Length: 88
Image 1 (spheres, rainbow, N blue to C red):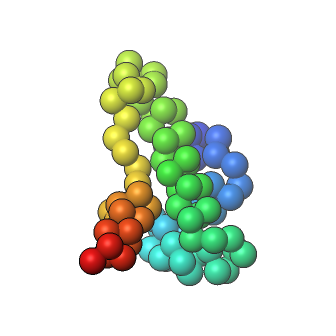
Image 2 (cartoon, one colour):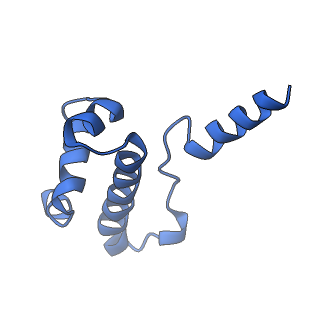
Image 3 (tube, rainbow, N blue to C red):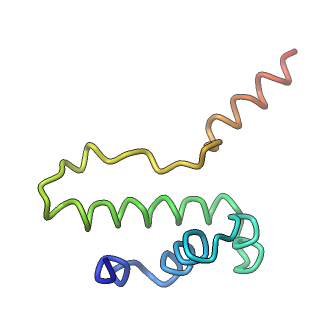
């Protein structure tokens, strides 16, 4: 809802708009706004969590049932692959 989106801070609104409306990539957003890709990824995750809580809370949905809002190739997974590749 518009009300839930307006409760996000400006950076969160900008990131969500660029990702889901303008379909921009995280790296492009990061470069244009002067942040790292990792920071933009964290802003996106935080914004999605806030939206989930705002939209589902009044419906009685348990906040602990919130899905994981990581990228498909989440940062932890990527680090593990890099470390494992170095061992070989």
